Amino acid sequence: MMLGYLLARAGVPVTVLEKHADFLRDFRGDTVHPSTLQVLDELGLLPAFERLPQRRIERLGAHIGGRLQQVIEFRGLKPFGYLALVPQWDFLDFIAGEARRRYPHFDLRMRHEASGLVERSGRVAGVSVRSPEGDYEILADVVVACDGRDSRLRAAAGLRAVEFGAPMDVLWFRLPREESDPEDTFAIIDAGHMMIMLNRTDYWQSAYVVPKGGDLRLRARPIGELRESVAQLAPFLVGRTGELASWEAVKTLEVHVNRLEQWHRPGLLLIGDAAHAMSPVGGVGINLAIQDAVAAANALAPSLRAPGPVGEAPLRAVQKRRLLPTRLTQAVQLQIQKRVIAAVLSSRTPQIPALMRWLLRFPAVRRIPARVMGYGFRREKIGEK
Image 1 (cartoon, helix red, strand yellow):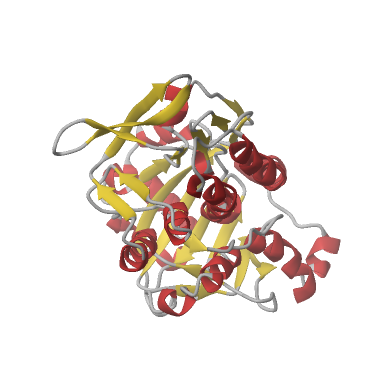
Image 2: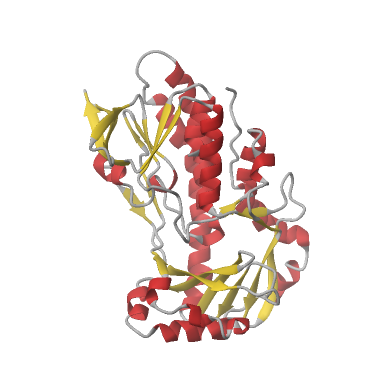
């Protein structure tokens, strides 16, 4: 959606395909990091964005072995010292609405699914589409696949990802929130268990971390076992875990960390999770994908405005530009998975070394991981129209 907006802003006719009738799907990432806020500000969209329902998060802590430890401090970062929790459907509707209002050559087609690639003369020349009106083809100078970690277009192109592995999967669910509950968004870490609690004002969006493959074993047992575990980790939720009436209320995210060796073919570019599936650690996947979109728009717009076919040079340029920040981000995530999450899930009692506890007393230290998480390793700037 962001790439469609940016290309339309640059004067390029663009078609965005969305296979669903709307964007209303639970448990998608809802974090809008400072890097994305800066993109919105550069586009002049920030005032309108700030009118969306949202909650600002200025710090993140963890209850480790029953002790609260502040870990990440966004306050004090410039120009944005917070991340915003915004329902992803609201964010997508917002970008789509602004694009339609401003740019008549922005064409968003709902309930239109890209089912395969159209190839002509050795290059990708468009996509085949399934729609309520029937199947058809769209021809395009460039196809950009943004269809996620299970990308159908990636498979059709024969591009394969290198898998780096993950020790966990995540169970997502909602529980009611009361005014007497903690205000912060935080993690709860204890021997064998980890749960992240996102404060969504009137409910908790909860991520319960299980060992890789443990979802099937857990679902084979009564839902009451999950309710009991949640109540033990977060005693203030006692009396509300009954909202998890069945396993149907729990969605599983299979965690993958992978990266394509090559993000493009003639006429085709992959970005976001289609090119590099991220761990949920840090919630940075959406914001890394938006940085990909900015880099792709900057690289592609001049070639798309010029006559003649688009060569591979701008496609290679996108991968070259975005590969290093992707590698660095995944390297950090893999270390956290190995040294923190795998250790916790193996039932080892979590401990923070005394020196680290002392260092984390200082906001300046807590801002170091906040800057990495919030702004990433390479921030893209919006190009000229």
